[in-house]
Image 1: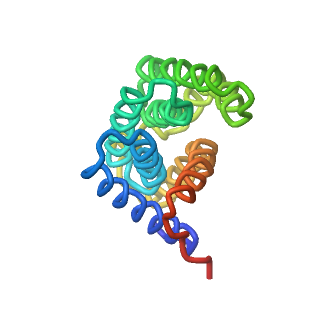
Image 2: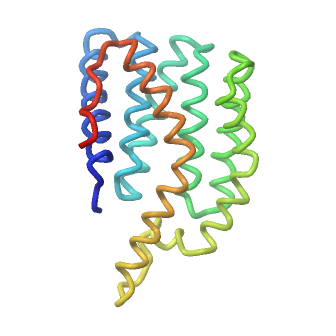
Length: 201
């Protein structure tokens, strides 16, 4: 995968944030804010991975968010991130029924986030968009993303073109999720005095 300098900077930034959160967790495992930042960094990093690796990172993110919510069940940004994690996981799952279960879980968490912070436009938009997600999932998997997700695509002369198209599609799927996660993560990281990423060249 060819990375633009800004993408490389984002990877470095969120990898640094992930390591900081891991280190903080070792000394303070009951810090719900830190767990939420850690999960947000994992969600960001997952978009630059292969599908199986993305799924692993998303599941790890879900685990961190569930842990944060055990500490603070009303933490609206953790509820919202959990909705995003389930949405991301659903899009990577080619099975329509299994994906629908993940979308249903996402909807529950988005509703809880809205209940805790009713005026938050990002949460409201996420809830609105997730209602359309199963239909988008069906369209995406009809057009061959399912083959890439399961690794069933046959190698051929056009496989590099297919791979690039599938990769672009994967970024489109994650686009609205990751943008919003990124915004929340940036605010959280700024509050915790993590140094900003290098400026784009």
